[in-house]
Figure 1 (cartoon, rainbow, N blue to C red):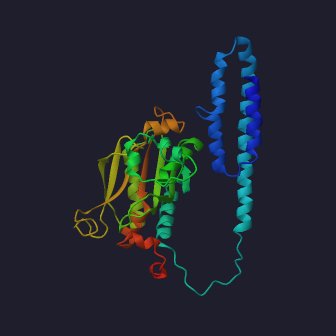
Figure 2: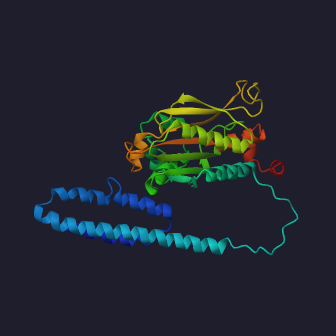
Length: 339
């Protein structure tokens, strides 16, 4: 075992200098330290040694573990500083250059996404960016959707030729990362672009935007979810919005609910937009499943929390009265000039 520990230390320190992104660093660290990781298996093997070996090798293994943990933290700091230097070099702007005469127009998705982020910032949420390419583990397994789970059939996934990599089907693929790299209380949202192999029509696209929300602390209740949702919707629409909860099934949460909000077009009188019900289907939510908490390194007996997720495209359509979601991918500049 002594040789295995030496080999692990040498390999990790050699590979660390080649890791260039925080995402790759976290992934590699999990391979070493998380359950079934190389270091974890070595620690488990200590119990099988003789009493004499257990003391000597156990002490040496702990020293190597501390060395590697420090090396990971140092590499993380180096990467962050390099990212800052690169950003300063690339994002420098000459503020003395006169503005162009042409009027700028932001895409409606950009407008609403910015408003959503600002609303949640005021409520104390951190903002994360969802990756467009992720792993099968992060996209499914880490959020309680194992290989045999029927929920996988509900998402037509774009698989990449590299083994285990997919185009993100949901911004939930960031949940495990947030749980492993944050300490409660956690309040975060994750906007981002996601992909599914959908047939295109007025309300379905193969490329669209989602917003994921995660709140974890002690003693989290339904009232906090209701207040958070209502505050965001009232900010977006600039008027009083009522919401209702209905039972729903999602593998990430237990129990699960679906959230509707009162139609902002007809005010409950019934119209074509709300299919004459007075309500708009909006998002899924409720208590984060204990399996997801455990996978993220949190004790579900100590912490609880809620998650929510909604389609940003749908919210934009509701805000601006856009009848067809395919307009968002249309290159016709006349569409953007309306906003």
